[in-house]
Length: 430
Image (cartoon, rainbow, N blue to C red):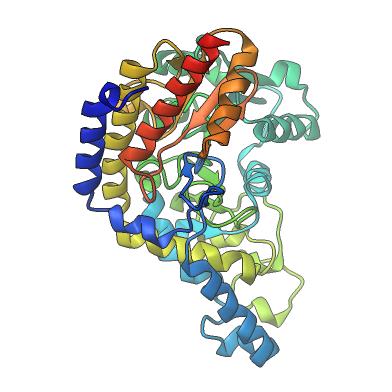
């Protein structure tokens, strides 16, 4: 593949990267290296975000406070452990478009999903169904099916699953139609902000409005939306949302997750599973057996937060605060549009783009299907990795590539497409 084949595309890439006002943030992350010492092209932030450089020092600080202060670090540490989860509250609220008391960093995503369903999935004989998409992430399937069974209902009849088109995309019309058709028996609508397999972004406000009109509770799994889309959860008005922090939030494997509970439920008597850290902090240490929940999302906490796991969240959210989610989303739309155009112009003989083309209907991820026999997809995936280009593979036939605006560049997208063409040329000759 000669340089001239991509001359115009490379000029655009270099121009876009030179004009990028967020370019300096790349230097705040540790980019994995190839064997020759060059940077990998890391397009897998939708699976695990890169490590911010500042995380190591943040962890060392907590270890030093533990070493030097022991239990007194709860009160005298550089970031005292007792109120530690509060250090991320303002940044987390700003990131998801919420009021500070509507958010809390706690647990893992599926734990939070179960805790939310204890409160917001209250099935009756007439209204027992949960609406999800058929291609929902398996953990969501497992969680909702187990909740349905726990309440004595059968997922075969109480689990309503939205069908998608051949690319895995679900139309807005079909979602609203399902809510209108089945709404009287739906207790909970649970959909993603961005669908993990197709990369489709959903209209959260329209879904919430339609579901509430039918008397349904509404929750969103934002694992692939938080740190990716410019969210406005308070204004959207959903009842709850949950998310993980290890993808676009770059907080490390198994990082502490997040939860949103709308303020109209801040002082509600909703049923919940209780733990001492969800108790009103004013009387928490009086050690009374009666549970008095804290106001807002804090009232759903169970245990005191794991400090060493929450420190990277604090570091990452500070980066998002300085970059600004609106600015990140603007760059993301430009970067993914460039990536989309590159693939359509130079690799359409190899790849089909399953993700919607419109910016408002996708995040940064493109889900790509490799043309030809199924083994071709695996072959291309392996070739990309051997070329230092890190993407991921999702069964049965999807390569996911996500140019993440905090650390990816236009030139990364170009290197991906060049590697695809190199594979195609070699594949055609063998």
